[in-house]
Image 1 (cartoon, rainbow over the protein chains, first blue to last red):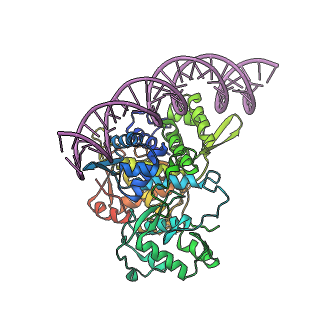
Image 2: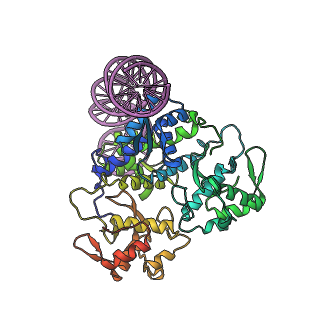
Image 3: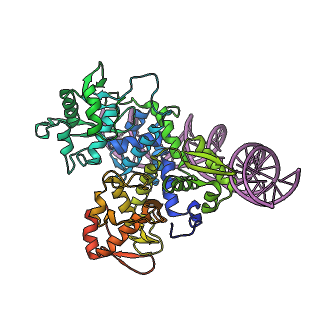
Length: 240
Length: 240
DNA sequence: GCCACCTTTCAGAGAAGCCTGAAAGGTGAA
DNA sequence: TTCACCTTTCAGGCTTCTCTGAAAGGTGGC
C-alpha cells in the first residue's frame, strides 16, 4: 500500500527530522495558556501592543514578554517598534486555521466543552449588535468556506452569494463610520464570529425572517423555523 | 467591538479554564514526535496494534506504550484488546483535520519545509500506482473539500462530480480485489493522499490527458498543460 | 502445565519548561 | 536634562516531562 517498507518511517521520531520538528515545535508553542490566548487574539483580531495584551490577559509584562519572545524565535509572531510601543502581529496567515481546527476539535469532546453552569445551550448570543455564540461562529465559518468572506474576516470574498441566501442585501449595507466587517474572537468558543456592519446586517436579516428571536439580555433563541432552515444554510450547524 | 470589557479574558490564562485546558492539553499531546507520528498513522491510515506501531516507528514497546497510555487518558485514542494484541484507533473523527492543519501550516514556512538535499521539487511522486507528493496531497484535499470523498478518504462522498472534472469515469473504475479508496499518509508531507483503485484511476486519467508525464523511477513531472490546468482544477495547488 | 509472546506498569535519573522578582535599554514629554 | 513609561533581559528555584531498564499481567500454542 505504501511505496516504502512498513518500517520506513523510523526516522520520523527523530527530533531532527525537519517535518517532525516543525510540527512538534508548533504544537509546543500552542501548549501554553498565555501563548495560546495571545496567538488567538493576534491571529483573529489583529495586531496588539505588548501592554494591550498584558492588560487583556491580566499578566505581568515580563511574563508575557518572555512568551512573545519565544513565539518570535519560533517565527509565529512579528514585532514592530513604533516609539516606545511594540506592536505584535501574527507572522503568517493561516495560523488562524490551525487555532480554529484545534478549538473545534477540543469542543467536540462532549465532556470538556464549555457547558458549565447549566447555562443556556449557548446556541446563540449577541455581541453588541451582531451574532455570537455557536450560531455566530457557524455563520462566520460558512461565509469563509463559501468564499463570501476572506480568511481574515475583514472583507468580502470572491463569491458573496451566501450573504444573499442568508437574507442580506449587500447593496443596502451601509458601514457608515464603522468597519464593514471584522473577525471577533468569541468569548466562549474561542472561534471567530462576524462583527462590523455586515455582522449587524446578518443579525437583522435573521430577526426579520424569524429565524431567531430576542430572548432577553444578549440572548436570542433559534425559532422553530430557524431550527429547520439554519442547518441547511449553514452545513454543520445544529440547534439544541 | 466586544460585548465584554477589554480585560474580559483574564481568566483565559487560568489552566483550569475548560476551553484553555482542553486546547493546551491537546497541543501538548501533539508536541512529541512519537505521539504525533502515532496519531497521524492512526487518524489517517486506520487502526494498528501496538507492535505494528512500534515496528513502524522503530521504538521499544514500553516507550510507545507509555505514550499511548497518555493519549488514552487524554481521550485521543481508544484501545480494544483482542487476544494478546491491543488494537489502537483514533477516538474521535476530526483529529485528522487538526493534524492536517498543523502539517499544512508547518510546511507553509518557506525555510523549515522538507526541501532538503536538492531533491526534485517534489511536486509529484507516485506511491506504487497512485499519485503522492504535493500533487497527490492537493488532489486528496480538493476531493474532500468538494465532497467527492468522505473525510476519512475511504469512500465516495455526496458530490463526486470532481472526479469527472479530473477525467475519471467512475462507472469504469473496477476495484477488483483491492479497496476502492484509502487514505495513505504521504511520506514527505505527512498529509493524506488518495490510494486504492480510485487513486490509480486518477493517476491514469492525468497521464492520459498529458497533465503529468513519467520522469523515471517513482517521479512524474507536471507538463506544460498540467501547469496550466491543474491549478484551476485544484484550488491552492501550484506547480514547481 | 509450560513456554513464547504481547502488553503494561514502575522507579529513578536527566533534561526541559515556567514563574518570580529585580534591573537595564530606550523613548517621549516636561 | 530629568522623569515617567514601555519593553526586554536575566538568574534562581520550582515543577513537569521523558527515557531507560527491569519486572509483572495475560493470552495462545504446544
